[in-house]
Image 1 (cartoon, rainbow, N blue to C red):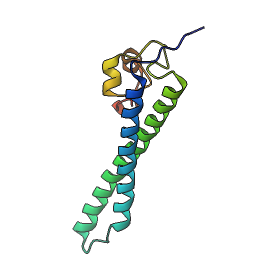
Image 2: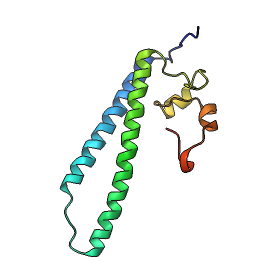
Image 3: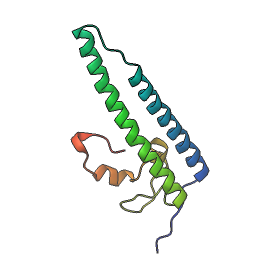
Length: 123
């Protein structure tokens, strides 16, 4: 039987993750509001500029959606008592890594060994 060790000060992590979740939700609401206010440009340069801005906005929106999902999963792990334990090797995740990426599911060693799509970072 594997005993689950909760990371130090679980309430601290819950408070931090809840604040990060609220921040993501605010950004997502802002993106949605801005998308509704966009006007049609009057010339081709304006149209090209708007298209480029839209691509950036969509990428940021997708990142925030994924981050929000990771934060929600971290809060679930905290409630279950498995927060702070690597999902792959079951070892504790180091405190510095949790401070940097409180939603992380993997310890540093497992995250470094995991291949990423197109060289992107692992959430």
